[in-house]
Image (cartoon, rainbow, N blue to C red; front, side, top):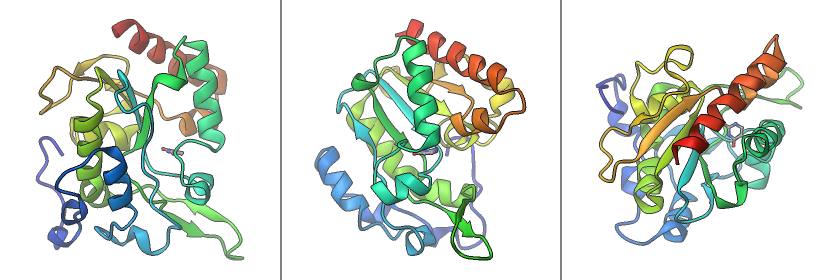
Length: 218
Ligand code: URA
C-alpha cells in the first residue's frame, strides 16, 4: 500500500505474492487466484471472487470485498450493493458492459449470527487488504484502465494509501501512485454505505454525482 509500512507482527505470512502466476493474462490470474492461501480468509469463504468484465476497460471499479451473494455466485457486485451500483452507473451515463469490476479483497469475510444461519459482513483488516493487494495490482497492470473508481474506504486505502478518507477525498481524480501510464483514481462512497445511510436519497445523489465526474474525466 502506498505510504504504508503497516502490517503488524507476522505480516510476512499474509501475502498473496507467492500465488501469482509469473506470466499470463486475466484468465491465468483468475485460475491462480482460485488457489490463493495468502491469508486466512480463504478458510471460511466459499471461493475466491476475482474481477469480471472488459479485459481492456478504460474504467475500472474497485469495491471492498465480495458479500454473501458474491461469495455464493463467484462474481463481484451481484447482490444488493451491486444492484444499487448498476442503477447509479446507468443514471451517470456509464455503460456497465464496458467496465472491469473487482474488489480490493477477493474473499468474503464474515461472522455468523447465533443461529449460524446468517453470515454477517465483516470489514477486512488492513493486513488482509495488503495481503490481497498483489492481485489488485496485477489486474491494474493487465487491464491498464485510464481511470479507477475506488468504492469506499478499503478500496481507497488499497489504491491511494492509508490516509485516504472518503469524506475528505472523494470526487476528485488523482494520479494512481506507482502507475506507469497516467492512470488516475477517483474515490467515492461504497454502494453499501448508501444502502445504510440515514438519508439514502442524498447519499445516492452523491454517488451518482461522483460517477458523473468520473465519466467526464474519460
Ligand atoms: N460489496 C463489495 O465491495 N463488493 C462486492 O462485490 C459486493 C459488495
